[in-house]
Image (cartoon, rainbow, N blue to C red; front, side, top):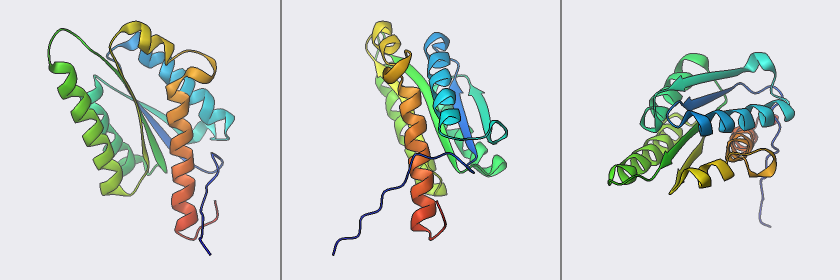
Amino acid sequence: MVSTHHAPCDGHGLKVAVVRSRFNDLVTQRLLDGALETLRAKGVAEGDLTVVEVPGAVELAFAARLAISHLQVDAVVCLGVVIRGETGHYDHVCRVAADTISRVALETGVPVAFGVLTCDKLEQALARSGKGGGNRGGDAALAALEMANLRRLLAGRRS
């Protein structure tokens, strides 16, 4: 018989850091609002939430690693926005952000959710950071909670 494991998106008893890029502040603030709203709604206590701000998307991974090392969090949510410009810089920033954020999770064993929007236009970023079900910051927060609980479940701890 196949063994299936599914962890809840429950934040009770979890410490979570949200790392937010200030670049494209209009959008990243909306992503942060969505992430915090979701984390609170799912039971993360106010005292177990930390927000760390960094200049841009490239710095997200370093701050995530610091949060894991110094704050002993159960999960990190990385939030940023990269909007395509007229140069190839967009491709480099997107690649570096994605590669380094995933590397932090793999190297530390702590879930790090990728909530970085990669959009062609500001309008697309605004649509993905709005209120309600379209906020990718909230989606990343849910992924972080589920993965933190899955880690506990598979490690034999109570979720």
